Image (cartoon, rainbow, N blue to C red; front, side):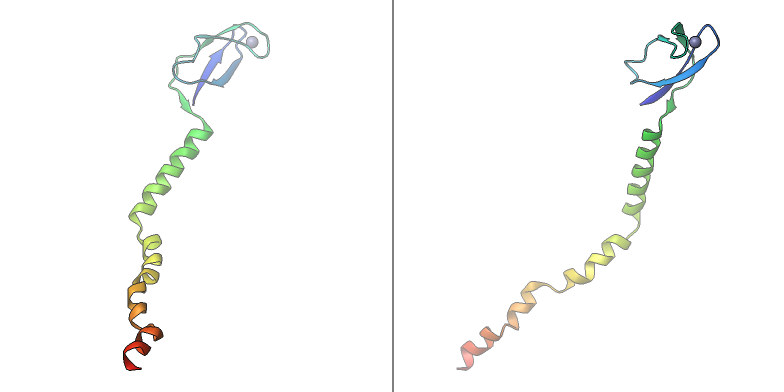
Length: 96
Ligand SMILES: [Zn+2]
């Protein structure tokens, strides 16, 4: 959620997070209780949002790096179908 800055008549500035639609123009000052007007500033991104961006960034990076995928490839190379031809039970059937 964006972080909004408010400034009360006494000059105290404080910040509060609201959704874009819920952000009020006036909020009660936590120190003096007076009406504080929302400052006209660009909404800052909260810590939770920046962490979310890091997550998206790392997800994009892992999509471009083939390391994770290549680790799984060798195990999938041994397909179970080739094992069936070497099944000892199959070798016994025609020879007996
Ligand atoms: Zn105040």
